[in-house]
Length: 621
Image (cartoon, rainbow, N blue to C red; front, side):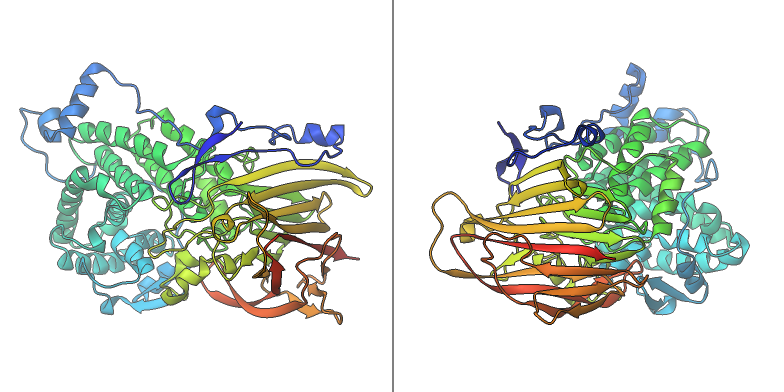
């Protein structure tokens, strides 16, 4: 039995959770894993890989009529107060945002520079025109006004308003009315309006009363523009940003009740198309997950400012979004590098979770999110055991299926390169596609080809359409261990081979056994040879040294602990024979800076009829 699953190329495939060979499982371990998928368990229909269903708030017939009229174009003032003169632009409340920005970026702004992922750009040299050529990361900061949060975090408001007015005046001068270009993309426009409203005391609290009036008028005009264009966003997350800003404007601008009703319905519908049933966004990007959480946190602060309660669906969604994000946190408290994200710091993750007010644990019942997490002793294993996102959902889509990361205490042993979302800062734009490739992840690569096609603009093409995964707890002579077995069909059409990876992590976190298998897909295996490369990108600060027999390496961590990597451990048929080599690599850190690291590589030729290769990572002493 199988359930329908949309593949990376848009076709409909099947996802099945099947049992492997019979394994012995202890009663205690089975009880501890009661929330995990059991052997041979097929996903229930309600948990299949489909969009979550969130409905608009239940309202009365009169409010439904108001919402319909507003959607059809009747002005909010006409619906709210038809016999009163239009209200002048003003804010109805002051928002106290619980989200903190980056202090260093705020200090740089006061010194006259934008600081974006480690790159400084003088404010005086920035072209604020709507169609100006800026890198994507600078577009989001400059036109989305996310810099206001950073500025608010670097000092007393009185010391920052002059800087805010300077940048606002320059931007307003270059953008007197809506236009085409990045400045008026729905996502950037939504973030801009929301930041104007949330940080109004900073943006409009200076001595320039004329500028204050211009910004208020621009906010009202931007809200009207979003009312008409919000569904033209480049993706669902951008649409959510637009709907969030519309709802906030309905709360904080005069005669806004019709707009608020309109915005709430659109926002909850868009969130239902962005977020899967287990709370993970369909782009499978932790950075996108963080953006969605931040938007809802800011919107909830807007409700609090006007002393209203947000719809229960929004509170429920916020609670749903936190556990998947925590599932990708390493033992150092920072994020893993998945789907273009970098190793976002523990402080930033903790601050976001605290601002949300949600107290919960990492996601355990992994379905749509697809990332398996195993915490064992001081070690954390993260494993990508799901197809990549569909092209229409991906922002920085990566061909990372069956890649893994491993950390021990405060240090990372095995990583992925990550950082495609930071391209345009210190990460050069020209290497963005390379960071999204299969070779930039700790997994197996056939014939130097991506398991899923990596396209331009963050999109993905054909490749992995089906992933089978099975997770169990094993009882061994040395104690208990967690076994995850998964396979994908990304190379089946081109090379007639399935890639299956088996990972077994002991519950004390000191030993990870792995085996990579190539299995003929369908018909008997083809004749001949094909090139392969098995890559293990090593974390920053790790002292890597090959053994004399070139079948392993030692990994010395900064805390003095030593791990050993051995190739061919426990393999019945070492078909993928080859020496272990060390090559250069890079890893993008929490600040978006590419750090030089190394990678262990085993490469050579293997039979098209299939093969297997086992390896071991073990802590010594």
